[in-house]
Image (cartoon, rainbow, N blue to C red; front, side, top):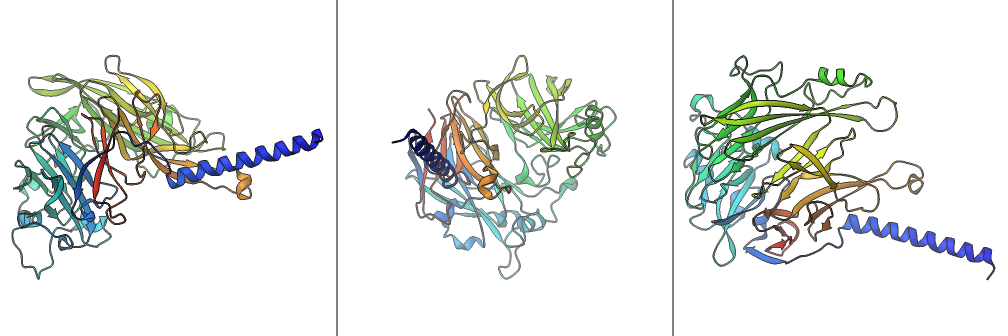
Length: 492
């Protein structure tokens, strides 16, 4: 064969192989083929697959030392699922018995907005000794289940409007239920549960330290929007602390606001002449709290502002700033003793374990791209570990955290990512195009390397047991798969 023909044949063969490999990478990512299945076990089974109907918030499995809970949510009335005689109607707990012919309350302003005006019901099930999830309660609103670390107290944070006649001291928070006997009886908390932090109860992201101490937070007071409750030199950080599982809580205040304004950023980056205004005066904000020991805790308030690239080309640029407040317990009260500001840091997510390790997703650049990093809790400095894992790897992609699904176990990290790959322009007749796909990954070397799991990347993660390094999942959603099993993988 002439040399020129040999080179041509090799070139064509290499081009075809490269094209096939590229198409395989795209197809595998988009269709979510492959993934590891380490130490697969069955957690339990539902009697009706609709018991595990998942959405992007509030649904899933919560495993505690005293019981394993499952929350599902669907459009429609509670009667679509057959309940046991001792299953609790939580609407009745809040409102009392009502005439069935009357329009039921409880799907008010918040719930109506979330469900597009239609009725929705959350179903709460608990795993029994025979490995079956039994329906124990239902409520006509979105509901997030939160448990104390020892599992003895369970809270249901709902979007159910509170009874009009029960608003002590002007509390307007949606209904929160509490059970201290594993779901046999529920009481609703008339005084709310951290009501100052958020009036929409299921929007809370409480953080427990030990069995009884718990923190919750909303947005800090701004420089020009101090609330009527703020006093000079005592500005709300938006963070609240309780020593008794939220029955009583106290606000954490600082001498000045933990937020900076857009003017602060404009002074720091005078080269950026156009700033995005859609996020308001304080930009995109995120708060994180960690209590390290009995006397020391930290609040991080991160802000991100977007502006047009000064060179007029390429993507917009981000300006990050994080304010860190150190708290010290004095005479049983937490006080801010030091405030530091980092003009190049945004903390997107933060997780920690019982061994004292703290890992976060942080951005220290100007394009809004997170990396996995570990916090040195003594020096309070960050050590980057890796980029976020992508289903398109090794192809280039933009990757972000999906729905806050970032977890830290005893010896593992778990993350759910969403990635976007831009094919070469010549493949789409020189027009812009993108392909997106989701994936679930885990790491057993603290983020230095990642392995993909055989779990649906959209709604696949049902829960995580950090003490056992186990991720809980199911095959498809409750609407589209007849497998009633709920499974787990061991991330060892």
